[in-house]
Length: 297
Image 1 (cartoon, helix red, strand yellow):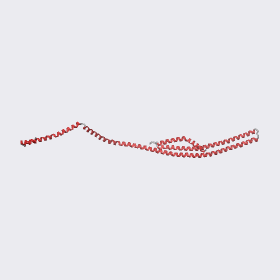
Image 2: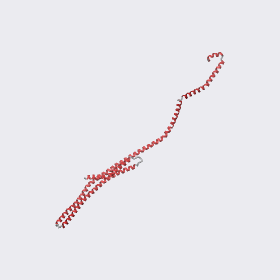
Image 3: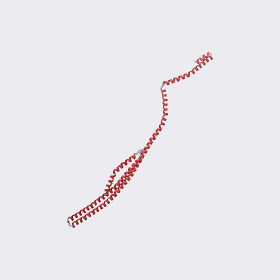
Image 4: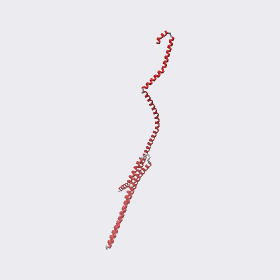
């Protein structure tokens, strides 16, 4: 059947490009992986270009498979026609050889003294038969050529249909692969942009921390000085409060100074009192003194 022949043709064409197809698919997957995992510093344009070239390579290999199918059916048709022509030619050649043999037999019979009517009749019969055989061989060759032409016309139609399908499928697959390449490019761009933003944020954070460090040191210095002063006062106070002898010496010194300051005043008051008493004694009579003596006690 024509379909069986077409199946064999398609399988043969597929095996012809199978190795190339596998290599191209492997290369494409590698380029897609490299593109989708690209980092900052990688050329996305170069990676994308390589992936697109691998995609186009797959498409061209599929198209070559379609062309291979057409070439196979054409070659098969030529081979079958050549085979039929060879068989026809062999038949005609065999008839010609047989005719020569009949002519040789006629000559031999004539030289052997066989009656003329006998060998001429036999040669005439052989000649007629062999000429018919030669014509039949030619006719068979022509009929075989027509049969082959008709059969392979059906095969060629089916091959054309399938090869077009292979070509269309390759074009559709290439379109999908180009979309995958575009998605891988977008993924790579997003990853690179995110990494760039993260790097910028890290640098900005470091710069901010460096800028804030002197301010923190300036604020910490006065606080440290105040703290040192407070610690010194506190230590001095604690030291005085914790030494009782020092406190007692301070109290005794203050009492002595107060007593020394009050002594002249007391002495002056006593002197005045004595003077006053002496005056009263001179002014009053002895009686008055006696009367006043109890008062002075």
